[in-house]
Length: 481
Image (cartoon, rainbow, N blue to C red; front, side, top):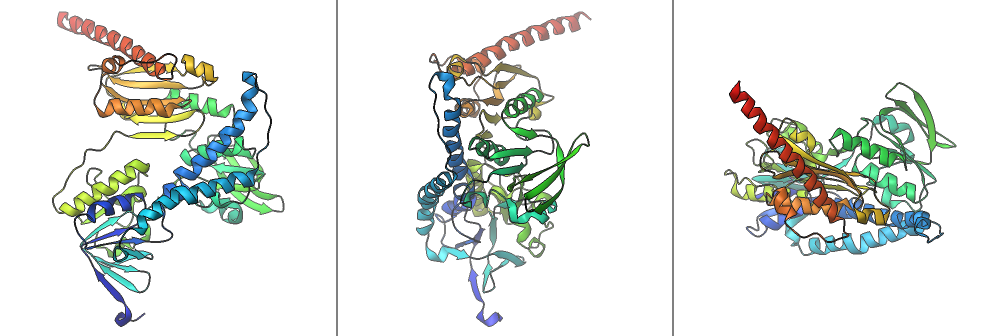
C-alpha cells in the first residue's frame, strides 16, 4: 500500500492489547484524555474469559460432579452415572460465551469507536506503529499489554495435528479417549486432573520433577505423593521424540534416570509454559536496547521499561501474573504513563495464587524459597481439621511462615481441600501486617475449615516461643563468654 493511502493516527497514548491489563490501563487513561487508541489483534474477550480462568473452572466443576459419583459410596450413598463429553463441552462453551465473554464484550462495545483499532501492531520507528498494512499510529507513550501464547516445543512438530493448547482445547466437540498432558504447571495440573475425572485416560509428563508453585521440599513431596495416588504422573524427564501413525500420536519420554518408553494417545495437550507476545512487536525498531521481554528491565512498581516511555503489563511480562495482578499492572502502567517522566511507584498487593486441583494448592505472600536465610518460624500441620475429616478430604498440608521476632505473618503454602478460602484469610492478614496473635484473637466456628488456620498459627506460636527462649539463652552464653 502506498504512503498516500496509509491512514495516520496521532495520539498521546497507544495501548497494545485489549485483555485484562489493557482494559485496566484504558479505564484509567480514558478518564484523563481522549488522545489514546487501544489496538487489538484477534477477537475481543480476555484470556481469562475465553481460554483461561473461566472455561477451565467450568470443566473442573463438571469433573468434580463426576468424581462425587465415583466416591459417594464412602458416605453410604451409592450412585452411578456416565460422562457425556459432548454435553460437558457444550455447556462449557455456552456458559463461557453467553456469560463471561459476553460480559467482557459489553464493556468493550461501550468504548468509543475512535479509541479502538483492530490489527496486529508492530514498531516501524521510535514512537511509530504500523497496524495491519493500512494504518500508522504515532504516539508518545506506549503500554504493551499484548499478552502471551502457549509455548510448543519443536519436538511435537510431527504430531501437530493432534496437539492441543489451552488456546484450542476448549473448542473440542467431544472429550478424547486418551491424552498426554505435557507440563506440571497450573494449566497442566488443573486440566489433567479434570480430564482424568471425566474418564479420559490421562498421563502427565513433567520436566523438573516439581510442581512449579510450591517451594518447600516437604510441600513438594506431599503434593506429588497426593496427586500421584490418583493421577498417572511422570514428574521428571523430557519428551525426546514424537510421531504419528494410524493408532494416534506417539510420545517417547526419557525419565531422569535415563530410562525411555513410548505411549500412544488420541491427543496431546501441551501446557509447558507461555511466551510473551512482545517479541512480535518489532522492538528492534522502537529505539530501545532490547528485543525480548526477558532482556528488558521492567520495574514492578511502575511497569516502566528502563527510562523509555514504554510500559509492559499483564501476561506480556515475564512473570505471567494472575488475573487480579494483570489488572493491577495495567492500571499501574497507566498511572505511570500519565505521569511520565515522573514515576508513581505503586505498592503491590501481597501475592496470591490458587491452583484448582483437588486438593487445591495455594501460595500467599512470600514463599518459603523467598524467605530462605531469614529468621522465620514455620507453623506446619496436616490438613486434618474435623471439618476436613467429615468431608473425607483430609489429604494435604499447610505451612504458615512467621517472622521469628515479631510474629508477623509473612507467607504460607497450602495443599488441601478448599484451600482457597484459608488462602484469602491469610492474604487479608498479610495485607494488614497482622501477627499470629492478632489473627488468633478472632472467633473461629466449630466445626469449620478455619479451625485449621487457628491450629497452624498456634503451632507456629509455640515454636516462636521456643525460638525466643533459645535466643535468650544463647545471648546469656555469649555475654558470659
